[in-house]
Length: 308
Image (tube, rainbow, N blue to C red; front, side, top):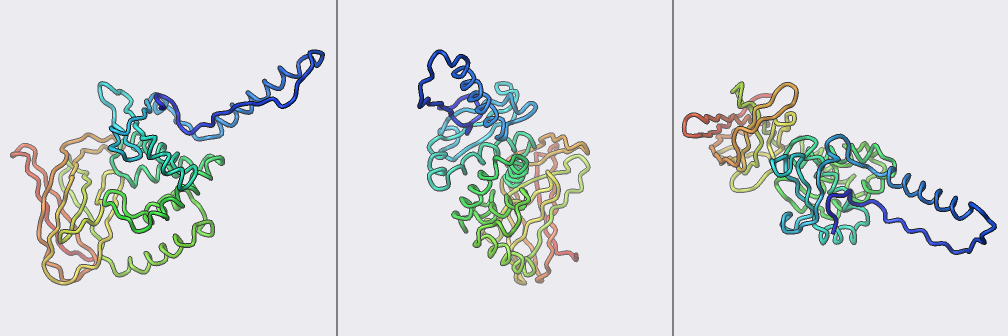
């Protein structure tokens, strides 16, 4: 069990296969000095958290992760720097499939804390960029991209598909397309073709204080993905909407006040709202969100087509 420590660092043991006579003087001592130095260099060659992230406790607790690979908690009175919980069982399962891939998920959780964001895409991109700056972590990136490709079209509205995550990591890490797995190259090309046919959903908030939100969008009872403007605008691509009435539902809505500096203050959490869209088949839909905490804590959304 790993607690309050960086995970994934090598356990280095040094085995002497030859005996050194006493008259060799410092040979044995020098050997161990060089070995220790080498071990230190190996450890420092891996990505390590920086700044206040070094104070974040990392604990092994599959119950906290609900048997997912990892979860992070933002700063609280009990955890003033936040906390990360990992499930060793899931890490072993992931590494058994793609050795070295599990390490990415640790850095991903640091990404949630570093960016003070709940968004999985933001944490994925942060982790990929961090690991790409450390040459020794290229293997981690290759392993996790392969792992996500293995997941294929398995979909979670908070993350997207396995292919979505693989593409997100590869692009954020700046990995050349020629180094991508062939199924990922094919997927990226298909996505470019599909994008031309899909509808773009954008978020609008006109309140100067309640000026940022993130939510999971459902259309006609089908989960689509995350719509957000909290960490920069992230429009959501949705399947082409045919002319007619469509039900749009916003689930797990979190509302924030954001400063120009990027500082976020939570206003409301876990809200829901829905609306009808009368579509004529246009390619851009604007979802407008209104929240009033002083009037019964009301949230409403409206959707309308717009021109690019």
